[in-house]
Length: 115
Image (tube, rainbow, N blue to C red; front, side):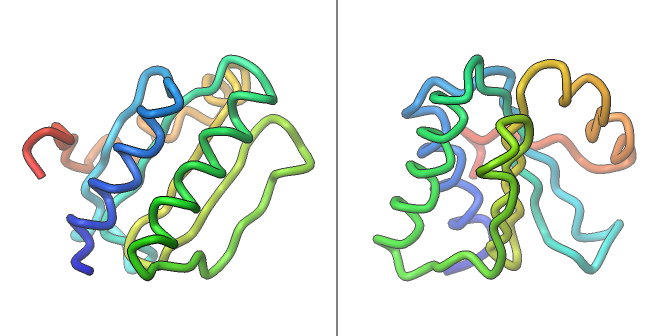
């Protein structure tokens, strides 16, 4: 799968579980870590887990397994690394604190519908 296809599936899976304030950043030119960051917010620990599980399931069904996952136990930030796409699922306070959108403000913001 291409990075764009992976990002699109991750976005769809997150939105299926009502992820809030979803942002898709194209970071290829800024880092070697990934091509896309998917950043979203969950309104509760239960919703954050549901979003993460939905993303992992949808990508797994399409042959993609995460290289690394962390944060399931913290209930404030879940990170799922698929190599070319990294999914960040935050609670509201932690997202505001880390403000990844500001940190990566040079990244191109992508409309997920355009993928």
